Length: 87
Image (cartoon, rainbow, N blue to C red; front, side):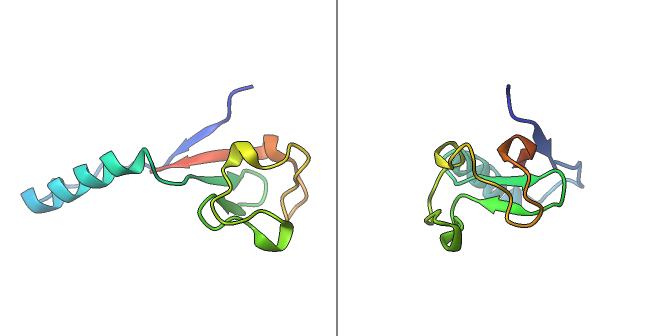
């Protein structure tokens, strides 16, 4: 099953040239960045960059590498109840 993707992209007022260039650079770099996954039940966020060291998930652990039986530390649901956060 494909993951649910949550997009928080909102339309905004036009940006100044410098701001647009910065945003374009950020968008290009974002493809290599760590991602965040949100629990659709309670809103807890798993950040790949931070991991969850207290649960054995080291910083930099990608979502695909999180064990299939891992549970949300806040509400105890499984990985199937998490959605990718995209901005």
